[in-house]
Image 1: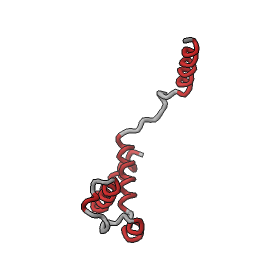
Image 2: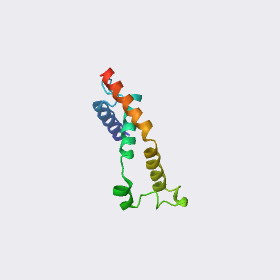
Image 3: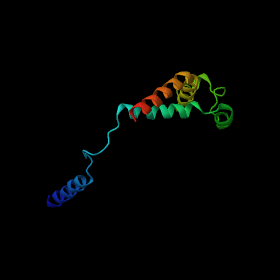
Image 4: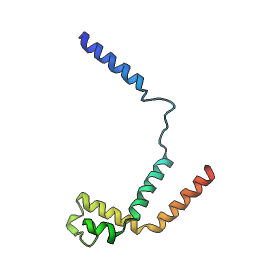
Length: 104
């Protein structure tokens, strides 16, 4: 019992020294989340099928209907959906740049 109390006391002291809930810590807001997702969408949009995806077996031509439920099928579908939505992606990038220029 005494040993457990000492162990729990040391654990509490260690957690307090780390300051997990410090008031000076930055909190990720919705804008930061939006920017992160926009960067991920940009990364998926620039993948070239002929030079990058096809040699690795990730082309849409090799993708059969039965594979849509697998993780690989879902990722291939996401890549092609993002590549299909390039015009809205360009607009979102423009809005993001303008907001950054105005707000600093």
